[in-house]
Image 1 (cartoon, rainbow, N blue to C red):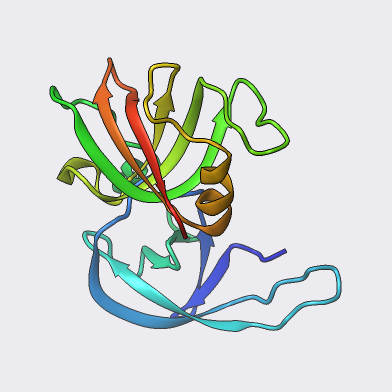
Image 2: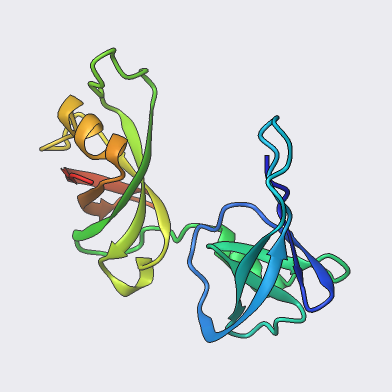
Length: 187
């Protein structure tokens, strides 16, 4: 287990929950130290990490390390950073396409032994291509019985299980991203 701590410029920074939006950075970077991990066999020792400056937040307040927000432990949590922990709402008036990294799937029915998914289910997608409002965000895309094509066992094995991607044709329905079509891309 790794502690979510970083030492930078003589101060300790605490790591925070999973970001749902990628914050902008300035390009300025520094070097910090993270404690070693202990997997039960002893600590692996401290490691050097690159800390990135966030746009609008000085490094004396918070930094970004490997996609995780670290806030200086003796300072309050920056209010401006709260938006990074919320996914954007689906609010487009016309259908559109999202492409990105397929992070997971959840459904009301557990997947069958062969990886077959039965609607309804939600896929978690980190958006790498699509409308500007959604780029860099992690969203939940809902699949229903009407989603054609949907995802099947070959998608779970060849894409989700191998770090692959997903293309979703979606429409907005009072907030949620509703999939009209889902296609996986192998990892």
